[in-house]
Structures are given as structure tokens and as C-alpha cells.
Image (cartoon, rainbow, N blue to C red; front, side):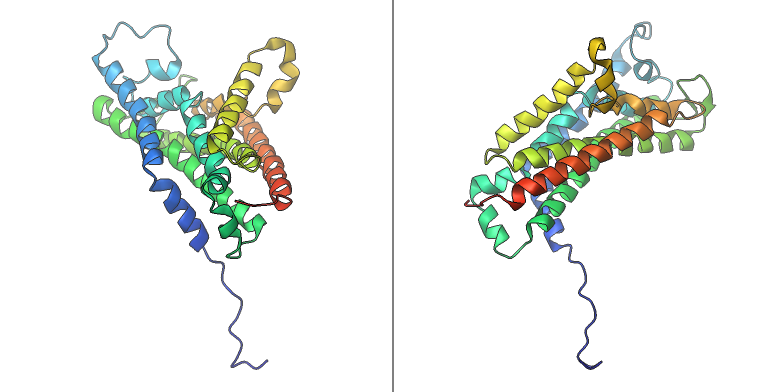
Length: 281
């Protein structure tokens, strides 16, 4: 081979990923789902705005602090939605990732392009991660913008009682959102695995929601406290530790470790299942 015929290493193409992201974000049902996620901070901020000032007792700290700083609208919204709405959104996307292709008969043709099965799963999961982060940031940004419009900004009073500047508070809100997005992405890995087991995307979505809900339920049973640190949802609320002074990173670090473990285990399980699967549809 001469220098004149050498064209160098072939670049990594993002065409498949871009196509997958367009498919996810341009679907009407997914757009409607994002609108539902964005509606929660709207409802929270309006409800707090029109309520009487004396009715703020007994609620979570994030809710009682909304009138002091609009950034807390985003945090209250994330707290509400991490139990059902955000897991449901991620379950819908991840459950449809492979099962949806098989259901409409495009999976077999996709693999004849040709596309390696490991690469297909990697791209599918990367798209799930992007959606999980986008869904979480949708809630956060809607809450921040509406909260600032209705309640203003300024210094943020942390859960520990000390105050930080607005820029530092906004940064912590964004970090909390990214942290939760990565946690939901690990749930997406579970959904990717379940999606390789069936050709019914609705069934896969329901299974992932049941998995998430069961984790929340098990986390409330004190008799099995030994298993709590290993549950996928156990550390989700640890994002509140980012709003202490000093920042308590222990829970967040453990949450990232657990998320990484679930991601690796279930992506490899999906690959093991899909690599040996006889694709006929």
C-alpha cells in the first residue's frame, strides 16, 4: 500500500444514533409525555402561588421553601416525579427500544444493513440515556423558569440552614438533575434488557414500571434493611444531599455506583440475550 492510496482510519459514524434520537423525540406520544412532565412544575408553582401563606406547614422542605426562591420549584417537581412519572417515561422509551422494532417487523431488516448486534444495543442504550437526561432537564428547566418568574431568585437557603448565592444554587439544581438523569438511565438499562425478551413494547414498559415500583416498596420494609442499599431506587433521593453545607457526597456517590452496576449488569444481560436471539421479525 502506498501513501497515495492510504485514506486513514474510518471515523465513527453517528448516523444511527441521530436516527434513533429523531425517532424518539419526533414521535407525538413521546412529545406528549415530555409535556406531561413539564406540566407538573407548572401545577406546583401555580398552586403555591395562589395558596394562602399560612398553609405551608407539614410539607417537604423543598415545598416550604418555594416562596423564598423559585429554584425550589424544580426540586419539588423532581421529588414528586421521581416516584412515577419520570420512571414511566424512561420505561416507555426503553421498553420500546428493541421490542418496538420487533413488533412492527423492522428489527430483522435493521440487522441486515448490516448492523452488529452489540453496536445496535449500544446505540439504543445511548439514546435511552439521552432521553433520560432530557426528560429530567425538562422538569428542571420548566421548574426553574416558572419558579423564577413567579417567586424570584436571589440567595438560596440550604437544608442545613446556611445560604449560598443564586449562581451556586442554580449549579446545584442542575447537578441534582444530571444525577437523577443518570439514575433513570440505569432503569433504562433494565428496560433495554426486558425489551429483548418480548415483542410487546407495552408489556416491557409495564414490567419496568413494576420493577421500579417494587424497588420503592421494598425500600420501605425495615425487616429487609440489608437489601435497601442494593435497590435501584434507594439512593434517588440522595440528590437532596447536594443542598447541604458542606455537601454530603456519600449518598450521591453510592447512588452512582449502584446506577453503574445496574447499567453494566443489565446491558450485558441484554447483549447475552440479544446476541443469541433468533430474530424473525
